[in-house]
Amino acid sequence: MADHRKALQALYGAPLAAFVAERKRLAAELRAAGDDEGAKELAQRRRPTASAWAVNQLYWHAREAFDDLLATAGRLRKGDLEATRAHRDALAELRKRAAAMLDEAGHAATSATLQRVTGTLSDIAASGDLDPDEPGALSADREPPGFDAFVPSTSADRPRRAVPAARAGRPDASERARLAAARSEERARKQAEAKAREAERHRLRTALRDAEAEVRERERELSRRQKEIRAAEESVENARKVVRAVERELAALDES
Image (cartoon, rainbow, N blue to C red; front, side, top):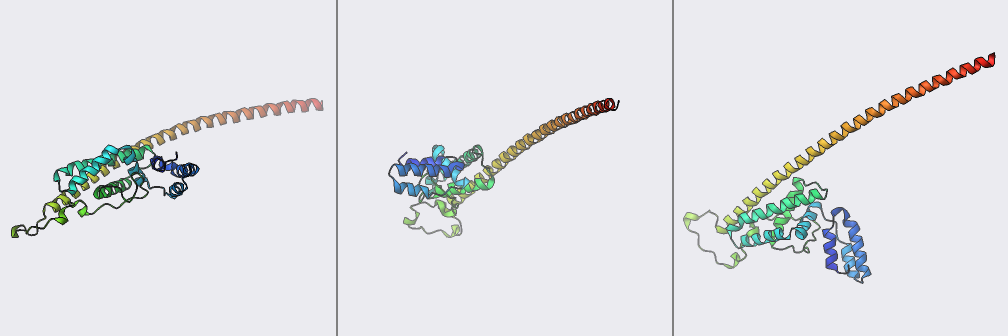
């Protein structure tokens, strides 16, 4: 593989546990192909956090849902309130898929990890792209955006209209859109966290049952071994008795 972009995709699409080995292998391939600069850049890539790794996997393996998140965020930035539910659903879907990917890869899909995944996704959605990172190559988590993340992009260019006295102190449409989006996102986050906690609880209960069954099996095996040891000890003692009896008989013959 001599293409730097393909090497980058292979590196960040690989299992997290294999990141260091893949980085070394892919850098060596680039160097052998004459791309010393690309090899050096790749060799300096940091191993991502588990949550950043999950976001990368969403980009590579759940692109349709990932693109839906960006599309709904774009509509919200334009002041389209009807996109609020779709944006919330897209974020919840990606969170659910991230939990499954983490679990399948052997990483704990804890609420803290999934909250970092959600925060990174929210920041990407608010900015509209993955800059300054290359797509699917995040190494670190991002901070979630503030309430002004979905301000319509053309609002700064439009003159403000006078606000009637009766409406003084009331939020305008763009502010309501931001607040509605924030509330929806918070609800989605809490729902996803509750589901993640329940999934983790189920996993731990299953692990506990398996561990208890293993203990019972080992105890039964230990009991069998102990019986075998006692039987072997009795056999040894009986054999010693036979030896002593024969020795006595030989001694008696020698004396006579």
